[in-house]
Image (cartoon, rainbow, N blue to C red):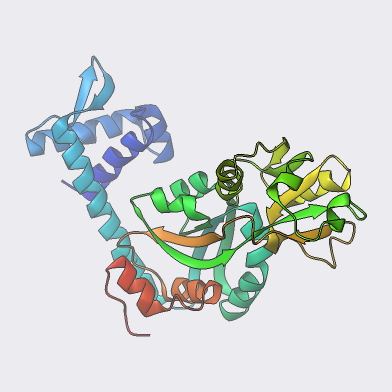
Length: 311
């Protein structure tokens, strides 16, 4: 038994039991993978896969247990590599962030600027997607850190840490009738076509929840995956926008006006998520603390239930 066999097993499952795709992903041949899996099965004395002729169709019950153990072994092997890199190259490496457009566009820029200044040798990558996509990227080791709203909390393989709360606001063109209303209500908002986030993005559930509790049917005319698109269509006069307050910048959004709605919509929490039991490089801890100062190295390590090296 060796790590390469375990990697082959894991990749086959990751590729939905497609041996050809697994071989391509690992830069090897299909017969080579097949042979190594057979050798592993012979050594363990069990069948890991259910086969129909030469085709793999599913994992056996024993295979499911073996896969779980193999993934833990591979995870710890990767952690060992990280420890070695930590001591050899303490200020260089890579850090991949997976996040939503709102966080990437309106929250992360000053944090990234500070981080790059502090760690110029660290290669920083930024992946964008919806909360489900970015959580899966971290689980699949395509990214190191996920940053999004509450929905990433439902992934068992991640440790999700609360960073900060934010509210939604309403944006309208200048001289819009809603600007004359002293205290805006959901009923007033529902009188106009609404442009807001798609269901998977930026706390949309909090918007829907508010209207449902008030038993008011909103007129959702258009949905988008980012605030810039919402603001563009509001400027065109196609409706009023409901978006993250942090995405409204007065000096840049001069053709729009913001209306406070903290009394209408519950706050949304931005979370930062990392893989459970993951060994984090020192600069990853520093990035997390730059993003959320209360998430110190000690706090993060304790949440992950792993020992933290001395700072």
